[in-house]
Image (tube, rainbow, N blue to C red):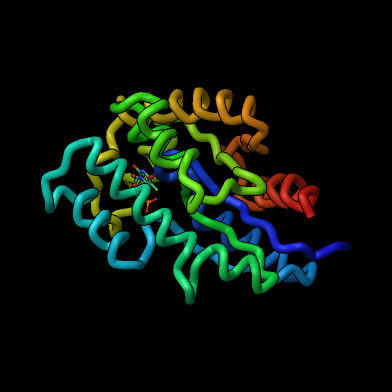
Length: 209
Ligand code: TMP
């Protein structure tokens, strides 16, 4: 197998099981001698920490300011000299990110429209296009059920039914547009068993290597 490093992104509305599935995928790829690094947005960089505060409602921000903050954090995520996506890929390491610009296009796009968020992300040369996006699809009902079960996780401003439903629709709209631009996106039904979902993700991902 040719082991050329890839950039893979996981997306899904809250509670879709991204964290579990990303870790299972990283373990499965490692078994196939594909070195992986797991990362996430918002990042752990200062720009990501600021976003966490804004998401928790601790600092007032407009929708446009949020979109700009996410784009800024994404650029840092790409170019950070120590842990950045570009650095990892050039070291031959496959990068798996929990969320990326699809989240901005869906969540911020729901308020600002596709074009405004696209201009901040798809037209930014410091924001790389992923090799594959895996969307874990879950209905808002299931999503809220799962979020409700996670008592340790504080509720953030985006977790309510209407918002989740609207965002899921926005994700599908975003994928239609991005597929037309040649992006590779797979949609996986995330309502089944963990092992079954993991197997379907692995089958889709291994094809890009
Ligand atoms: P998470 O850590 O659970 O993925 O939470 C991050 C939250 O931030 C989630 O509700 C989605 C939101 N978000 C955006 O609105 N736009 C973005 O570009 C990203 C990366 C996340």
